[in-house]
Length: 467
Image (cartoon, rainbow, N blue to C red; front, side, top):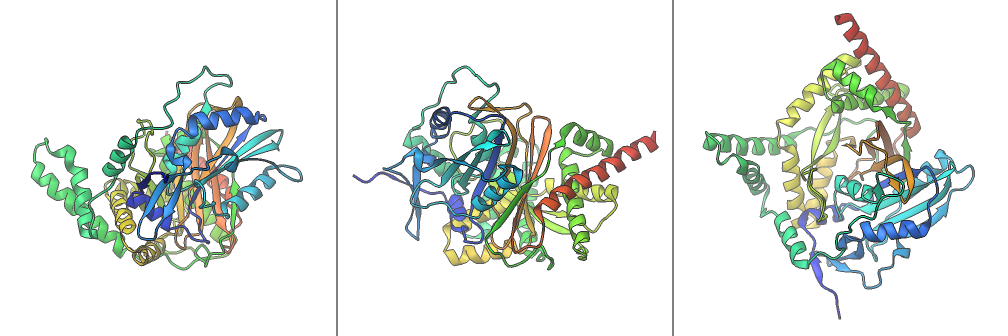
């Protein structure tokens, strides 16, 4: 008897169809662990906490016109969890090489779209490498799901586990709530505007605020369409599909906070300025001219409440284009420009507009999505994520997580993904670069640290001078 098919939301289907040989649509994570862990305990943890989401037991059925989720009748955890060991010195270079290979390899579409590799004997401990397809959920949600495997202590008390089989009625209802009534881009903007202004209905001057919000959404849609393509640089090359992954030694979060306080900005402003400085150093090392108007990166913007538990998966985020003023070489002036750019973005509806566009693309023919994706990916040189993580150290199956890193996929012809993740008083920074792009990922990691040192030194020196 065939199992029930659940229609895939238009937004999730958009991410499914973005999958290409050059850019597999996977969120990839690496958790390094202080000690090795028993496989039976890891399996039990995955079964209790990860597989409680039905989506990880379901495969994709793509009929061309529509896509569905369907329970895998032959689901077996052993098809998704593999135990391996690193060759040679089993050091960071070997783990980065493995992560690079996995980031370049597509998932098996005959089964549920996720894989985990438990890596024994890594620098005296172990590691867990996780890959999950973007059509299942957005990166911020999946990071939270991955971290739900962990505990705050090595030997926690048994946790109450939520049923792994929520009712289909609830799931269907949630999917229906996620869908928008979108027919064309103008209706997309209007629909999103209605959602954005519901909270204003009881406020004074509601009609004026409604008109202002609707016109703001329409204007941001127009700005997105008219934004110029990224200038031709070494960061924009035809892609090979082979990825190189690297991550830096973490920054001290207290030092980042001190820097942001001295500059009168946010931690996010400091980190974006630090990324800008790393790109400046990359261009200088390659003796390449920096574009006059800087470099644009696509930044995922969460549209899901962070203070609520994730019970239903799916993609609930938009993208904003952020200009990094790489042409401004003075660290303090660069920071001021970053801060100005971010303050302008906070007043815009770019994230909501791109979410509605993804909904539109997911409903239309493949050719529409391909052309739209090509158009949007020509407007950014990289994807950059900045996700706040837990403030205290976590434990996976009894072993302390020493360093977590996550990457979201790039789409279209974008070949660079950068990731910032805060964890237990540190700031982690990682990168994935297509091999066809002439950028040494480990060198960029060093540039990131050098850039932060330069900005922090200038900020603290300026504060002392002002006293």
